[in-house]
Length: 116
Length: 115
Figure 1 (cartoon, chains in turn red, orange):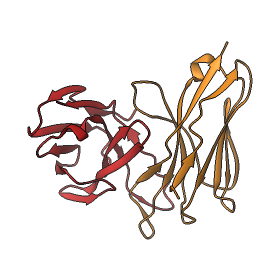
Figure 2 (cartoon, rainbow over the protein chains, first blue to last red):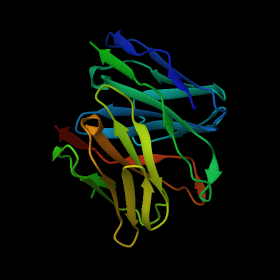
Figure 3 (cartoon, rainbow over the protein chains, first blue to last red):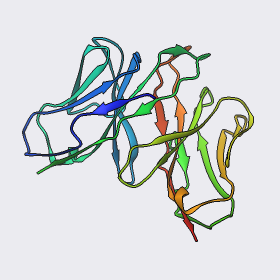
Figure 4 (cartoon, rainbow over the protein chains, first blue to last red):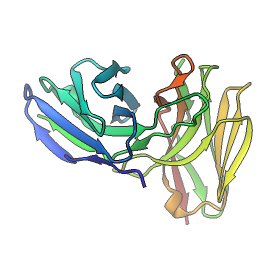
Protein backbone atom coordinates (compact mmCIF):
# COMPACT_ATOMS: atom_id res chain seq x y z
CA UNK A 1 0.00 0.00 0.00
CA UNK A 2 1.05 3.56 -0.69
CA UNK A 3 2.04 5.35 2.43
CA UNK A 4 2.15 9.13 2.66
CA UNK A 5 3.07 10.27 6.14
CA UNK A 6 2.63 13.72 7.57
CA UNK A 7 4.59 13.85 10.78
CA UNK A 8 2.71 16.69 12.46
CA UNK A 9 -1.01 16.07 12.76
CA UNK A 10 -2.02 18.96 15.00
CA UNK A 11 -0.11 22.19 15.45
CA UNK A 12 -0.82 25.50 17.14
CA UNK A 13 1.51 28.34 16.17
CA UNK A 14 1.68 32.03 16.86
CA UNK A 15 1.34 34.73 14.22
CA UNK A 16 4.71 35.49 12.66
CA UNK A 17 6.27 32.12 13.49
CA UNK A 18 8.00 30.07 10.82
CA UNK A 19 6.23 26.77 10.38
CA UNK A 20 7.47 23.56 8.76
CA UNK A 21 5.12 20.81 7.63
CA UNK A 22 6.87 17.60 6.67
CA UNK A 23 5.69 14.87 4.34
CA UNK A 24 7.31 11.55 3.43
CA UNK A 25 6.17 8.96 0.90
CA UNK A 26 7.49 5.43 0.57
CA UNK A 27 6.47 4.52 -2.98
CA UNK A 28 9.26 6.20 -4.93
CA UNK A 29 6.75 8.59 -6.52
CA UNK A 30 8.13 11.43 -8.60
CA UNK A 31 5.30 13.87 -7.95
CA UNK A 32 4.42 15.38 -4.63
CA UNK A 33 1.83 17.99 -3.74
CA UNK A 34 0.65 20.25 -0.98
CA UNK A 35 -3.04 21.14 -0.80
CA UNK A 36 -5.00 23.03 1.77
CA UNK A 37 -8.64 22.36 2.54
CA UNK A 38 -11.07 24.93 3.89
CA UNK A 39 -14.83 24.77 4.42
CA UNK A 40 -16.65 26.15 1.42
CA UNK A 41 -13.46 26.42 -0.63
CA UNK A 42 -12.59 22.77 -1.07
CA UNK A 43 -9.09 21.55 -1.79
CA UNK A 44 -6.69 24.02 -3.34
CA UNK A 45 -3.22 23.31 -4.67
CA UNK A 46 -0.42 25.28 -3.02
CA UNK A 47 2.71 23.83 -4.61
CA UNK A 48 3.79 20.69 -6.36
CA UNK A 49 7.09 19.07 -7.23
CA UNK A 50 7.82 16.64 -10.05
CA UNK A 51 11.44 15.92 -9.18
CA UNK A 52 14.04 16.53 -6.53
CA UNK A 53 14.78 20.24 -6.20
CA UNK A 54 12.02 21.03 -8.72
CA UNK A 55 8.92 22.90 -7.69
CA UNK A 56 6.00 24.64 -9.34
CA UNK A 57 3.45 27.03 -7.93
CA UNK A 58 -0.08 25.87 -7.63
CA UNK A 59 -3.18 28.00 -7.37
CA UNK A 60 -2.47 29.65 -4.00
CA UNK A 61 1.32 29.83 -3.40
CA UNK A 62 1.37 33.22 -1.66
CA UNK A 63 2.78 33.02 1.84
CA UNK A 64 4.23 29.53 1.31
CA UNK A 65 7.42 27.98 0.08
CA UNK A 66 8.48 24.37 -0.36
CA UNK A 67 11.58 22.25 -0.27
CA UNK A 68 12.35 18.93 -1.88
CA UNK A 69 15.91 17.84 -1.17
CA UNK A 70 15.16 14.13 -1.36
CA UNK A 71 12.72 12.27 -3.57
CA UNK A 72 10.69 10.90 -0.69
CA UNK A 73 10.36 14.12 1.29
CA UNK A 74 8.45 17.31 0.50
CA UNK A 75 8.23 20.12 3.03
CA UNK A 76 5.84 23.03 3.17
CA UNK A 77 7.12 26.19 4.83
CA UNK A 78 5.09 29.08 6.13
CA UNK A 79 7.67 31.84 6.36
CA UNK A 80 5.60 34.01 8.70
CA UNK A 81 2.40 32.35 9.77
CA UNK A 82 -0.80 34.35 9.69
CA UNK A 83 -4.26 33.60 11.03
CA UNK A 84 -5.64 33.17 7.50
CA UNK A 85 -3.34 30.19 7.11
CA UNK A 86 -5.29 28.28 9.73
CA UNK A 87 -6.40 25.23 7.76
CA UNK A 88 -5.98 21.55 7.12
CA UNK A 89 -2.96 20.81 4.98
CA UNK A 90 -2.83 17.69 2.87
CA UNK A 91 0.27 16.22 1.31
CA UNK A 92 -0.09 13.85 -1.64
CA UNK A 93 2.04 11.92 -4.09
CA UNK A 94 1.70 10.27 -7.48
CA UNK A 95 3.80 8.55 -10.10
CA UNK A 96 5.02 10.58 -13.06
CA UNK A 97 3.63 9.80 -16.48
CA UNK A 98 2.35 10.93 -19.82
CA UNK A 99 -1.35 11.15 -20.47
CA UNK A 100 -1.32 7.49 -21.34
CA UNK A 101 -0.38 6.65 -17.79
CA UNK A 102 -3.37 6.89 -15.57
CA UNK A 103 -2.11 8.79 -12.60
CA UNK A 104 -3.68 8.55 -9.22
CA UNK A 105 -2.70 10.66 -6.28
CA UNK A 106 -2.62 9.41 -2.72
CA UNK A 107 -3.09 11.60 0.30
CA UNK A 108 -1.50 11.69 3.69
CA UNK A 109 -3.66 11.94 6.79
CA UNK A 110 -3.52 15.71 6.97
CA UNK A 111 -2.04 18.32 9.27
CA UNK A 112 -4.36 20.60 11.18
CA UNK A 113 -2.70 23.97 11.69
CA UNK A 114 -4.11 26.68 13.92
CA UNK A 115 -2.41 30.09 13.89
CA UNK A 116 -3.28 32.28 16.85
CA UNK B 1 -17.38 29.41 -13.92
CA UNK B 2 -15.73 27.03 -11.51
CA UNK B 3 -13.43 24.46 -13.07
CA UNK B 4 -15.13 21.57 -11.31
CA UNK B 5 -18.63 21.94 -9.91
CA UNK B 6 -20.62 19.71 -7.62
CA UNK B 7 -23.88 20.17 -5.78
CA UNK B 8 -22.84 20.70 -2.18
CA UNK B 9 -25.91 18.93 -0.86
CA UNK B 10 -26.49 17.61 1.62
CA UNK B 11 -27.93 14.66 -0.22
CA UNK B 12 -29.97 12.42 2.03
CA UNK B 13 -31.02 8.92 0.97
CA UNK B 14 -32.53 6.00 2.88
CA UNK B 15 -30.51 2.87 3.50
CA UNK B 16 -30.67 0.54 0.52
CA UNK B 17 -31.43 3.27 -2.01
CA UNK B 18 -29.27 4.48 -4.89
CA UNK B 19 -27.31 7.66 -4.25
CA UNK B 20 -26.49 9.73 -7.33
CA UNK B 21 -23.69 12.28 -7.20
CA UNK B 22 -22.98 14.64 -10.07
CA UNK B 23 -20.04 16.69 -11.27
CA UNK B 24 -19.38 18.98 -14.23
CA UNK B 25 -16.05 20.32 -15.41
CA UNK B 26 -15.04 23.16 -17.68
CA UNK B 27 -11.76 22.06 -19.30
CA UNK B 28 -12.48 19.99 -22.41
CA UNK B 29 -8.88 18.78 -22.41
CA UNK B 30 -9.29 16.92 -19.14
CA UNK B 31 -8.34 13.27 -19.43
CA UNK B 32 -8.77 11.60 -16.06
CA UNK B 33 -11.56 11.77 -13.54
CA UNK B 34 -11.67 10.60 -9.96
CA UNK B 35 -14.07 10.23 -7.09
CA UNK B 36 -12.73 10.51 -3.56
CA UNK B 37 -14.59 9.83 -0.34
CA UNK B 38 -13.75 11.88 2.73
CA UNK B 39 -15.01 11.10 6.20
CA UNK B 40 -15.20 13.94 8.67
CA UNK B 41 -11.75 14.79 10.00
CA UNK B 42 -10.02 12.38 7.63
CA UNK B 43 -8.13 12.73 4.37
CA UNK B 44 -9.66 11.90 0.96
CA UNK B 45 -9.65 8.28 -0.09
CA UNK B 46 -9.81 7.25 -3.75
CA UNK B 47 -12.84 5.12 -4.57
CA UNK B 48 -13.16 5.33 -8.36
CA UNK B 49 -11.27 6.52 -11.41
CA UNK B 50 -12.59 6.75 -14.97
CA UNK B 51 -10.91 7.76 -18.21
CA UNK B 52 -13.22 6.74 -21.08
CA UNK B 53 -16.78 7.60 -21.92
CA UNK B 54 -19.34 5.23 -20.50
CA UNK B 55 -19.76 3.37 -17.25
CA UNK B 56 -17.25 1.77 -14.94
CA UNK B 57 -18.45 -0.47 -12.15
CA UNK B 58 -16.67 -1.52 -8.98
CA UNK B 59 -18.81 -3.33 -6.46
CA UNK B 60 -21.62 -1.02 -5.35
CA UNK B 61 -20.05 1.96 -7.11
CA UNK B 62 -20.54 2.98 -10.74
CA UNK B 63 -18.80 5.95 -12.30
CA UNK B 64 -20.23 7.43 -15.48
CA UNK B 65 -18.39 9.76 -17.84
CA UNK B 66 -19.72 11.84 -20.72
CA UNK B 67 -16.94 13.97 -22.17
CA UNK B 68 -19.19 15.62 -24.76
CA UNK B 69 -21.37 16.96 -21.95
CA UNK B 70 -18.37 17.43 -19.61
CA UNK B 71 -20.15 15.46 -16.98
CA UNK B 72 -19.12 12.74 -14.58
CA UNK B 73 -21.26 11.03 -12.00
CA UNK B 74 -21.05 8.45 -9.23
CA UNK B 75 -23.83 6.03 -8.37
CA UNK B 76 -23.81 4.17 -5.08
CA UNK B 77 -26.17 1.20 -5.03
CA UNK B 78 -27.59 -0.30 -1.86
CA UNK B 79 -26.42 2.72 0.14
CA UNK B 80 -25.28 2.03 3.69
CA UNK B 81 -24.96 4.38 6.67
CA UNK B 82 -21.20 3.82 6.41
CA UNK B 83 -21.33 5.56 3.00
CA UNK B 84 -22.20 8.82 4.77
CA UNK B 85 -19.32 11.13 3.89
CA UNK B 86 -18.30 13.97 1.60
CA UNK B 87 -17.67 12.87 -1.99
CA UNK B 88 -15.13 14.84 -3.96
CA UNK B 89 -14.98 14.92 -7.73
CA UNK B 90 -11.50 15.56 -9.12
CA UNK B 91 -10.24 16.19 -12.63
CA UNK B 92 -6.68 15.76 -13.87
CA UNK B 93 -4.98 18.87 -15.18
CA UNK B 94 -2.75 18.37 -18.15
CA UNK B 95 0.40 20.31 -19.04
CA UNK B 96 0.94 19.55 -22.69
CA UNK B 97 0.99 15.79 -22.99
CA UNK B 98 2.31 15.24 -19.51
CA UNK B 99 0.34 14.65 -16.39
CA UNK B 100 1.97 15.58 -13.14
CA UNK B 101 -1.03 14.23 -11.37
CA UNK B 102 -2.32 17.69 -10.56
CA UNK B 103 -5.95 17.47 -9.65
CA UNK B 104 -8.63 20.14 -9.51
CA UNK B 105 -11.32 19.32 -6.99
CA UNK B 106 -14.95 20.19 -6.72
CA UNK B 107 -16.20 21.44 -3.39
CA UNK B 108 -17.70 18.09 -2.53
CA UNK B 109 -21.17 16.72 -1.97
CA UNK B 110 -22.20 15.71 1.54
CA UNK B 111 -24.05 12.40 1.50
CA UNK B 112 -26.11 11.17 4.43
CA UNK B 113 -27.55 7.66 4.39
CA UNK B 114 -30.18 7.25 7.08
CA UNK B 115 -31.34 3.89 8.44
